[in-house]
Length: 150
Image (cartoon, rainbow, N blue to C red; front, side, top):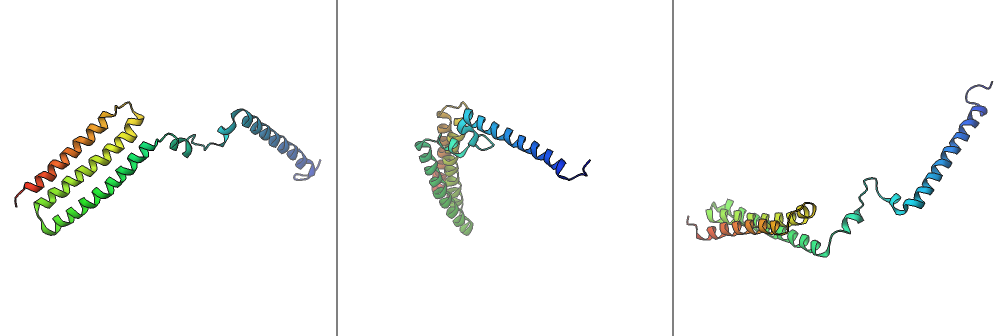
């Protein structure tokens, strides 16, 4: 009987490794023939191309304009708030709050439309109503800031 680790025991394991390799190769080739491109997907099952292919050009435009609204509204709010902190004028505080509400309404309304209404059974009028209510509230605060006295 040969000692452990000699050619007699190694030869048996090599034959077993060859059989395993052939079985894996056969399984991959048969799966590739029947499934095709599905074997190239990521482990999560959702690829980037799958998600992007469901986004329309109009939704990209909405996301772009809402991003621009967030940047511009954020800048106006920031500078209004800085002016309020410098002067302690209630008018500027109300102006900053009004622009913050308008900006938040536009961004949250767009997000609500693009995300929530897509994956839930919510009609399009709900995000529009939500955005319009916040915009009207914010503009009311801005109008208040124009009429408030020191």
